[in-house]
Length: 316
Image (tube, rainbow, N blue to C red; front, side, top):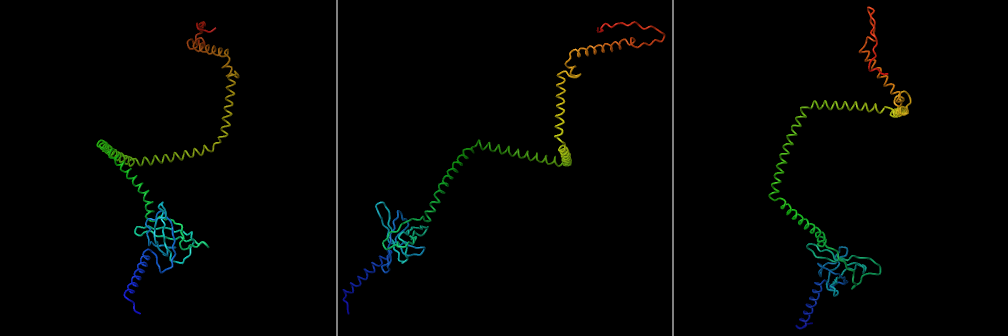
């Protein structure tokens, strides 16, 4: 059977159109030769996700993103993707957008849930969720660090400005003077240290003797302390209380005029008599000194004694 040129041309045109449709569908992510399922998910932002991005389940590529378009007037986006696997999962499984590395773009992964009677079918809309990628995580971590770094740089700039303000010519001269005085002080301290070392070296024997004596004194003090610890403090306290009681009784007796000492303190007549007696004894001793012949008679030749003369200051 022979075909005319026109028929051949038509058949060739149909094949070209079929190849064009098949290629266009394949480039869009649809394989017309496979019986795959189409699902949808809605997101508010899918930055980095593009058509032909892979779709995975537990890390296995099971499809690709077909199209991304606006879902409503609020700017939400609906992602159309297909799954060419017969793997069954629930329609409540999440379609998670993840990734976004330094080189590769984002991908879409299905987090499968297994619920009997709720298997996902072709055309179902799965719940969508966006997972932060590497760039977002790095940005979240770097933003606070950047703010702290900027604050640190600002503080450092302020500090340097303050230091420049402090280190003017006058202050520099003052600092130089301070360092000079400090150097002199260090030298003097060094000299003092050398003299002190020499003093200790020259008097080492005396210091050893002093420490030995101090140790001996400490030993004796320990012995005295041991002796004192053996004293019956309680008995001494009782005896002291007895002595104080007796002293208090004597004091009361003296105040009440009891006994010889009490009468001497309280009886004015006895005091007056003692005073007269003392005065007479004084006059007697004075007269004995001035006129011893009145009391001692030595007569060798029988000479008569001189008559007694009454003293003028005699007491009646």
